[in-house]
Image 1 (cartoon, rainbow, N blue to C red):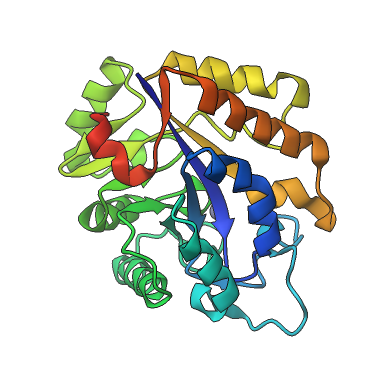
Image 2 (tube, protein in one colour):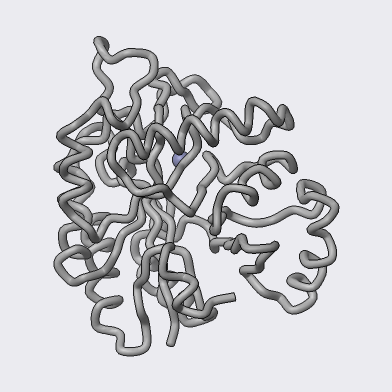
Length: 269
Ligand SMILES: [Zn+2]
């Protein structure tokens, strides 16, 4: 059996419900769980290098406050809670650029604890999975995340960023060419880049996903809801690719799509 975890990043208080519904109804109707990496308290002035507004703020209005806790959008929270196929996982705090690339231990701990509280205040179960903005974590952030979470989902691991105590396990993982590993009770998952991205070749996307899924026991498939609605318009070709992926995953007898919380049952690492 092979396992796939679908991770869609950047749900926040300003995410339009109909975008998520359009993208993920075919998954939910087929019983395919979708993990939404959700920003607890989004800053509405976040920009990418170069100064453009971040894509996940595409529905921002001038009247929106500087910070928007997820619980400030009760309609979105109700929609997410009404669909148990969504697993809400903890994604950063404000989602500022590289906010977890800091070694200020107090600040890192406060962002993690405040973010967890805000997700729970909104009515979501405590997330046991953490996703860092831009997949960037300092050594201190890795230590603090491992104290609090059972799963860290990120892009890749670099020796120079790892706590020294993790180095022997990392060397073992490297020697065995394992994409995923574990420190203590925390699973450390890597992913093969954003395979579902508007920046990739549409013609080869489904095949690339399939090759990746076939190449390892567990694949984390990462995408971003806002890439399907750039400039507020649906990219029909890209949405079709996502839905074709759902069809193929549902039809494959030897693949199970699972939420992060079921990793332990799947016996993956
Ligand atoms: Zn993000």
